[in-house]
Amino acid sequence: MYTKKPSWIIQLSNWRVALMILVMALALLFSYQLGSAKALTIIDFFDVLGEASTLILAVLGLILMVSTRPQGRVTEHFYSGGLILIFSLSLDLLDEFVHYPDDLRLISWLESLPQPLGLMLIAIGALEWRKEHLQVTRQLATREKVLRDHQWLDPLTTLYTARYFHYLLQREIADVAKSTQPLCIAHLNLTCFSRFNHSYGSVAGDQLLHHVSELISLLLRPSDCVCREHSDRFLILLPNTDYAQARQLLKGLANAITNELDTPAYLGCQVTLHEVKEANAEQAIDMLHEATENTSADTQQGDTRAARTLA
Image 1 (tube, rainbow, N blue to C red):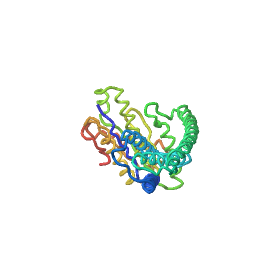
Image 2 (image 1 turned 120 degrees about the horizontal axis):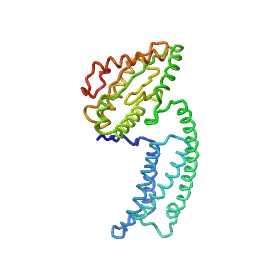
Image 3 (image 1 turned 60 degrees about the vertical axis):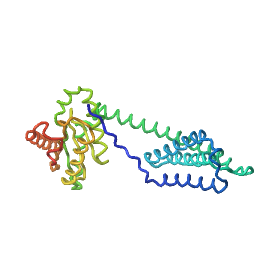
Image 4 (image 1 turned 90 degrees about the vertical axis):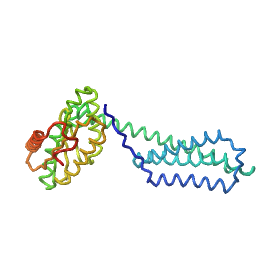
């Protein structure tokens, strides 16, 4: 059975993360400037464990949020509230290691008073996030209804269909005629997919197609478009891209598909590329299919896991 390999990396090169580390460093400096270190014999390490766990979870949550969310009001509310909480939680943890003068109340205030403010900012961010989510959901529902009504959305992979590809290609050809920008289209199919389906069943085959469609969508540029033609075959539109650029892009795409998915050795990826010079979408797609059939006739099934037409 195949498995999808994890491919996530949290980017820590973010000024917000650097500021969070600076806040914790300031809390440490502030604490030891106002107090003195406690003897190890009087430190309650059960309290240290609980407070350190809370701080670590808060830090990890804030890093994950600022590394994945786009900039905006929601992110700023979450970040500001989280930063205030981290400052208070840092002082709360340091309180287990540092002894302060009995008449010094400032540390107690800084440990407790900012926390409601931080939680309030996070709550405001959550409310804004809910509004944002409802708006996006309404937009997606409207868009999905239009696509389904026009039979432009594939129910299995949620990619666009070949019918939508035809519509989009015709529009791009019209734009190319005005701007003289290059335009390429490509055909991608999984070799020996029927053998995989027979060996592992249709459910596993559907899962594989879903994972492949996700991977293609992830690796293509925002201006590109991928559609499912049928079964294991996909159509790719590459606007403002000449043949050499498209060839390089699709070689990387084909290699990523065969490397990222842990599939049997016989299952490969074949890609055919065509630079559009035709006057309409029908002619361009016919030329692409003709090139694909010629390539398939020359390729023995199970011979390779690479994209032979781009090698």
